[in-house]
Amino acid sequence: MENHTDLELLGSNYHARELIEAVAPLSLFVDAQGTVTWHSTGMGKSVPMLEKGVALTDVFAVVRPAGIENLQQLNDPRYFVVLAERRSTNRFKCTKVASQNNGGFMLACSPMLSERNSPTHYGLSVSDFAPHDIIAEYLFVMKANQMGMREANELIHSISSKNKELEQARKDLVYLNTRLEEKAAKTEETLNQAKSELLEGEKLAMLGRLAAGVAHEMNTPLGAITSSADNLSSILRAMFKEGFENTDHSIIAEACKLADEFTAHDTLTSRQERAERKLLSEYLETQYGIPDSATHAAALVECGVLGSDKDIIEHIYLSEDVEKALQATTTIMRIRKSVSTIEVAAQKAANVVRALKSYVRNDSVLSTAVFDVRRSIQDVLLLFSNQMKKGIELHMDLNQKMMVQGNESELSKVWSNLIANALYAMEYSGNLWIEGTTDSTYITLRFTNDGPRIPEEVKARLFEPFYTTKPIGEGSGMGLSIVMNIVASLNGSLEVESDERTTFTVTLPKAPSHD
Image (tube, rainbow, N blue to C red; front, top):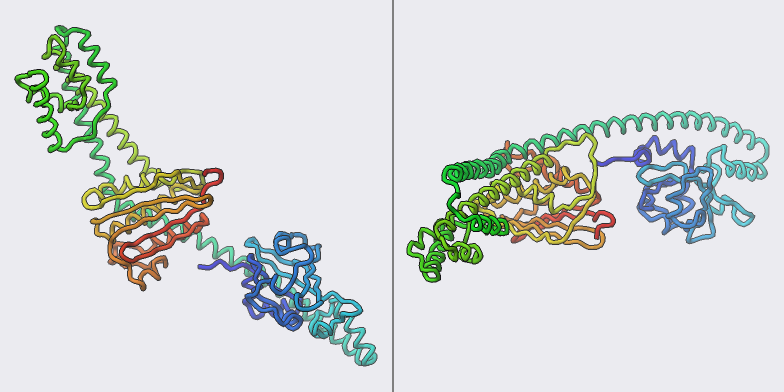
């Protein structure tokens, strides 16, 4: 819904225009871009090339203050503005009588008279002016000289009557303006309340769709923590029961040192584990002549030691007592692996909680901060990871720092809607590309999927409130409308292209001082 300013409402109302023309017969409205949006009949007679929609500076030179920019910034109603018509020698003295928060304003003007320039030179007559205007008085004197006192007295009587009408018109105009302001304020309050309710409803709907996946994402690390804790407990019980009393302390100390310096490998699949056990078994048998190399290899791979970990292998198999060195080293490495698993799983659970907290946060007053959108997108992807793991291939290209100023929770709704729509379009099977670029002023993010092409008639209505192609009960049709409003509130843009692939492009202003 468009937000109309008071000037636009007055300019579009027939009775209001009559009142304005009566009070200020030479007047015009100009918007924040310097475009004439309305002019009085008298102004149109005086300046024939003046039309609605033309730039003010195409018709007039702004002589005082110098230039349109200074005129737009002028706030002193006592300061008179001088406009010079470009296609004649006519000049107008104006007062900036109304300004709006959006940058629009109204000018009430009168011709600048001289011996060479009379009102008739401007194509004007006494009927074009308010009776209290000095120009009307000037014309009255001229008329009196021509028509005599009888006609002048009749004109005085006419002017007196018109003055009363104008006073009543002024009161009506003040009343109308007051009512318009009250109505606009009430409408804005209603719209803000409706917007808040729609945002909250869409957020709850999205949370409902994410609930199962988030629960799974929490269960996975919690299960790993529980399993590792049980494993750690069993190892410690065995240590306390059997102990290392018969093992050389230097072996234990060296094993602890190696475990502390050890860099864990990526998690192996079952097939990879079998291959590593086979390679390590062959290496132990060939290099060290271990008769039961398969058992040794299985114990080492189980605690995370592979054939590439030469320091640990040499520590064990160059010891005087290989069995005790193997037992001590694998026990310590198993402890280290369990602790590491707990740390990683706990961090993953914390990340899920942080992402969920960021998404559901409801600020009564939206606070803004400078943050990197890459982290925001990664947090949202974490909430979708269970839905994506079965059939979605994710391609990320967010290598540059992308700092914006805004509300992170609000932008999380942008990413979640775009990602959710992409997954739905692909029926949770396909490729999702998330790419970002920056320049000196803006950051650009592209969310691309290889799902079906969006028909032109659907694409034309994508950002309309309540428009959806989903079955009843599966979508409110508010998602992309909300996304558009959030992006627009940050002075950004949202565009969609759909052919072989569908791409939603979000452009946002870069935060100041973050290159």
